Image (tube, rainbow, N blue to C red; front, side):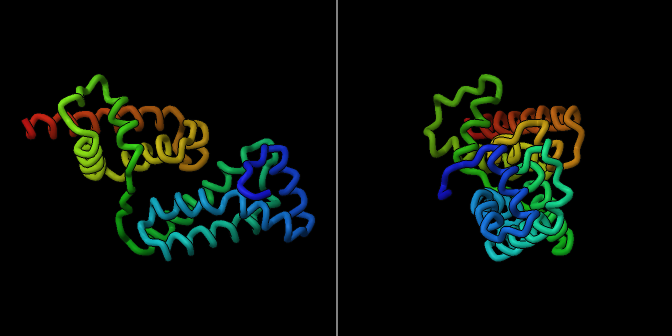
Length: 192
């Protein structure tokens, strides 16, 4: 199967095979999601070893709960929810606030900030400013921005992953963008 993305129908076929005991089908299933699940765990935990552990635990938990998966649901969302919860559990045990990492997504978010004029800044400076402002946001704001921009999750998928109502997520995302914009404007004013 390689790097080719499988359709939901193909994934459901693999899931059926796994529930019938196929270890080869399970290996293919893991192969499809290993990188994105690890990436999400790394974003949340900020530690390669912890992210590896969390991803492995998420895959083990998914395997153990695979019989509960509803075939009418999206498998990736179900799996991300398990990984998200695993990371949250690890963070609670570690009692530390996660820090979300931002890179090329900074520019995309900055462009959505209502008409902020970036023409006076070079691209690198802009990215550093956005990165700095995002780090100042509360974790909840960082989380919704990460899921929406980095993980490219729909509001429906975000609801399933976080357990937060879709309308509440819309409000949280809107407010996170507003807070980010205010921080960006404040940073621009202090630079001038």
